[in-house]
Image 1 (cartoon, helix red, strand yellow):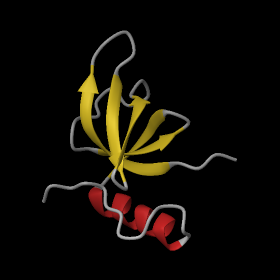
Image 2 (cartoon, one colour):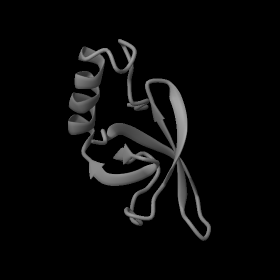
Image 3 (tube, one colour):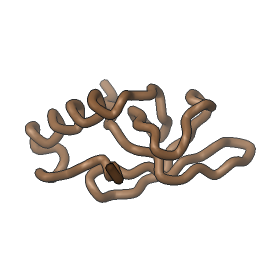
Image 4 (cartoon, helix red, strand yellow):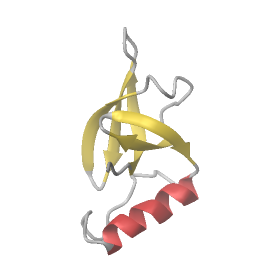
Length: 84
């Protein structure tokens, strides 16, 4: 079983495989955008196994992240890095 975690795209790098830097809980990771070619900087996505697999609206992303925090899987007070 795999778990997807909500993240916010902060940078996109075009190339043979479009890649994104995503932020969640203060950490920046890299993921592939092959499944979501229309995703853009500032979008919220679910990341699973290094791939963004679904676009989320900001409210759904925040609710999902809150569940991770409640389960102790992400540090408390974590945010998706929204700028407002």
